[in-house]
Amino acid sequence: MPSFVSQISAFVLLAVLSGVVARSDDNVTLDNVVAPPPNRSDEPVAKEFSLSNAARFLDSAALTWQKDRKCFTCHTNFAYLYARPGLSADVTAHHQVRSAAEELVTTRWPESGPRWDAEVVAAAAALAFNDASTTKKLHPVTRTALDRMWTLQKEDGGWSWLKCDWPPMESDDHYGVTLAAIAVGCAPENYASTDAAQKGLDGIRRYLKQNPAPTLHHEAMQVWAASYIPNLLTQDEQDATVKKLLALQKKDGGWGLATLGDWKRGDELQQDLESSDGYGTGFVIYVLRRSGVQPTAPEIQRGLDWLRKNQRESGRWFTRSLHKDNHHFISHAGTAMAVMAFQACEPQVLSSTSP
Image (cartoon, rainbow, N blue to C red; front, side, top):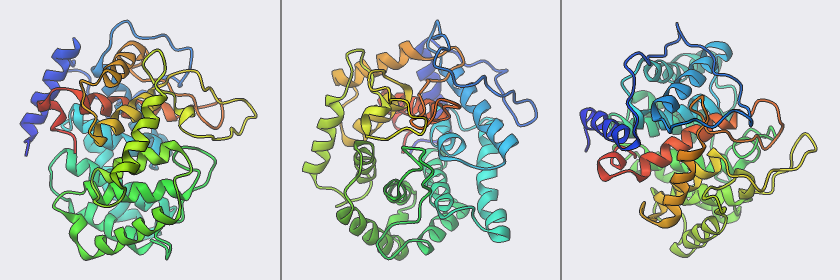
């Protein structure tokens, strides 16, 4: 398996291929973090594609959220733990976000309990994915989070999820079930073979069989999960989802998150079904790669080209909120997904750092 040194070498290779060199002074910490500017649709496009700027945005957004809000969310610091190691895990920001996630499990949960059942699933998934991207070892705290996840699984195989009308992550139970499957599947050291995981996976399979995905986004989540978990989907089901995803690629090469579902907005405005965005493009490319679509496929290359041309000056990829035109925090997850898309599509030395 690749060592930490090979991960760093992979990042250097990606920087060279992208025409980007990381600066040695880009060490964002809780002590010096400056909040990134608001997520705005009219932020200018960057003159040059830069993974260094993407890393700095992710560091700043995650640490600002941690420092000011003192909690974890799917769209910001949990998403950060998925994406950041592929650029470099050995930075202060990553260590600080990872440490805070571990403290969530070891300190806050025993003292006051999780805020919601969803927090347990989301933390277990982020920590497991992070382990797989870094040490390739299942951290004891990750195991604790995964084991606790099963204690909250309902009789129907699902979990009580957050329903805040904040799609695609916090609007229905189905998302939580596929996230739990991803957590188990990507966890190192064959955690999925444990008795608790096998029993839990039986429940997940039962839930998914009885509850069809409500959106194409969640169908894609199932494809992602099925890349780890045998017999979660048939090959025909996976192929059908891939076909639908490919059919939604826009003329400019990107994908739009709003086209992956039929979500209703909370501000009485219309969803933007015409524009490509960071989350839609990064997420679809990543899922296509997990499904086995080759990085040389023309659809993948056109999608990566869209990402290169549409990064914003701050380093982020803008994604409009599916709920309200205010904070657009889904841009944080969109930036993470864009980074993961590049990680999954670069030469083998780089893609091997992804779980």
